[in-house]
Amino acid sequence: MKQYRAVIVSVLVVLMAACNNAKELDPNSVNLGDAGAKFKTLNDKHFKPPSLSTISGDYVNTGASVWGAHGRDRLGRIYFAVSNYKDYNASSFLYQYDPRSNQITPQSDALTELKRNNQFMDDMSQNKLHSKLFQAEDGYLYFSSFDETGESNTKNPTWGGVFWRKKPESIEWEYLFSTEEALIAVNSNGRFVYALGYWGHVLYQYDTQKDAVRKIKVGSVPGHISRNFLVTNNGHVFVPKISGPTDLMVELIEYDEKLFQVNTFTLNEYWNTNANDNHGIVSYVQLKNGSTLFLTSTGNLYEIVQMESDRSKVNSLGPISDTGEKAYVSSLFSPDGEEMLVGLGRNEGAAQYQWYLYNIPSKTLVSYPVKDIDLNKHLLYGSLTSDNDGNFYIVGSNRQNSEKHRPIVLKASY
Image: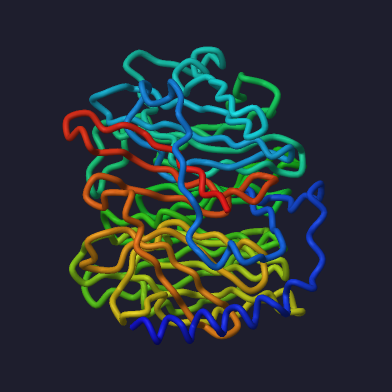
């Protein structure tokens, strides 16, 4: 195995030398609709695991976890949301972290903002803010919250979901609309902001220019919701459709900006047959060329390539594993936006987290054990989000206290 890894590293180093000649992106440039991929030129440090440090603050007292809910604004400030169990706290809380000053600033919470927007009703709950935060071309940060009260595998929660936006400089949120479904994920290309709801994979589209809302039901089996969906630069959106209940078939449906279906792609490596961690699309990145790479909960890597015809093709790149085992890699980043993917995850049956280094052109992988994080006591997530210095942000739940879980925010630094 050591010889195998040495060969892989040698290949990666050779490829790195070629891309070191590429120009670094202007740090002031904006990839509209992106949750925070700021690319840098690769250097030697990127070919080793980063150092992981905890962002400390009072946010640990407001909830149980950060379920992948983070993003950034154009100035490089990081946002993350703390969620709660439905019987612990009925609200979810938003925070802003400034890497330059190392300061965390509270950004209000869901119930406070429902009251301020005259939308609150007695016993109302919005204990989850699960979505990523995207800054659209209008300057607003968009995100969603939802309730878990009374839900089952076939029944929507009592208070459904709420679609929000806020200006980065304002603590107050602006209420846009409510839904029957719990809104678990948000994505955007800049003009259009989409939200995905359960149950049934119901897709909502908000047009930031026309202040208009559309919706369409994509379809899913009872009890299943993909944790993410994809949006490409042309405003096309890709959502898994799961047909069942027996002989499950998974298709990735492509819709255009009018929510007309334009294509269908089969995803053969989507569903875990043992029903564990069936979280659908668990992580993704968008590269400089507009291609989107995403991982399913089985550890299979897929690529969405935009064609000149404004259509797309989806390629399966195979498992992101150097052992042949399935892997759950729920954080994914690209340091340079061209050659390399990195992320934190775990192989099936592994005793600890691993840091993955994947070279896209050669499809070669190296993984390193992460000894400082207890696999059994931490759940970690996060895609895309980086600050202007190229640090990545991974979020999740610290479960060392089994009776009262705490949120955690990690900075991965080179």
